[in-house]
Image 1: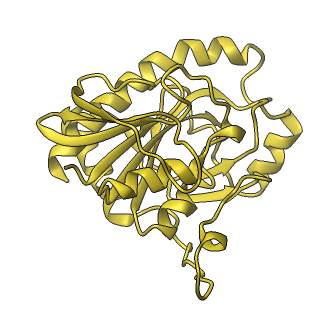
Image 2: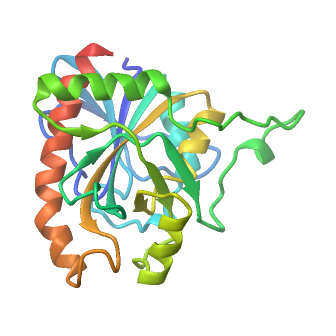
Length: 245
């Protein structure tokens, strides 16, 4: 049984190098997860993989059952979660192709079931979310990057927007004024739910385009160009970090 899970985002519906041992269907009190949990070996380390958008990339960000996904992982014994996410770069430093290990997040989503508290009996539990990502897991990702030959940006603030549409140029300017460096659609409530379940959670954000208004037109062509390369780099980082955990 593995205590480490990887949640794959856009461009990572399957984990390269994962030696699949079995797939497990988990039913949860919150409905069905995005798909079966894939158990296997990566770089000799047991790991669980889950495709956030489904294995055919059919689930849009606002329809993902985040509660079921995290609950299912915790149910099978996972204690640490590395989430891979494709994002847009807002600031100049966040160029397409960059890997970022964010340390902060701002939630702009709405209407997504974002807590387990209403389902529990007893007193309401207010999680401490001052630092939304696990410090030790972030440090492990950053430390593994050098030996893997992968450059990472070790900090950044992730803006989680509703989607599934991309943002307007004016919205991106607002996010930048708020102090955000990256924009994506799946960072929340995933991070908060992991904290409620006491899972160590960190994100590897893959910058696949300049955010709206930051790099001219052709956002979709930028994404297509950067996605495969960026996810390959993320795969190398995952392969390097897993044996160290």
